[in-house]
Image 1 (cartoon, rainbow, N blue to C red):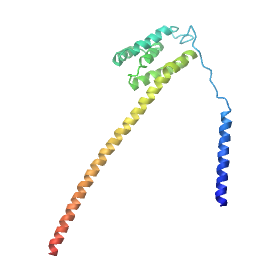
Image 2 (image 1 turned 120 degrees about the vertical axis):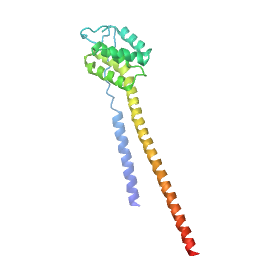
Image 3 (image 1 turned 90 degrees about the vertical axis):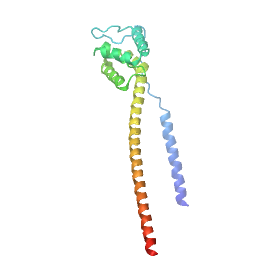
Image 4 (image 1 turned 60 degrees about the vertical axis):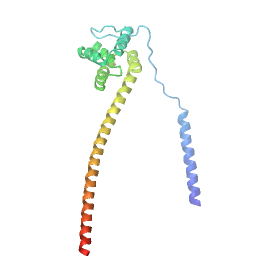
Length: 194
């Protein structure tokens, strides 16, 4: 009786303590990071790289995105293969890989190239790319990556299942042979008893 009373008391105290912890953390305000706003005169770079066109022309980049979205992957792939490693072409390649029909490897290659130059962009440009395109692009890559892992797992399990089916067939055949041997021995045993 004393033990059960002690256990109940401990449970009540533990519950009260966990409630107190939850209330303490609920009273603290969340830390909010300041958001960079896009304003008129938006530019990708404070000082654009050499031969970089359309630095402050958001309309050009939006139209490039719209054009990319309306092209099939094979047409975009041909355009990608003609691009150089310049900063302008890196941004253009990233935009060309944003549509959902882009294969994972090409999407990842463009994302990594953009990540390499992201620190050169203005804070507003970094935030714009992160919010408008980057989050969705990363989510698509994560889903594709997860699908590949699941596909590999399913393939592996399918192969294991086939091996197990073969093993079951082999065991069934051996069991039938053993049953046949047993039947033969029983028949011989009966014939010798008569």
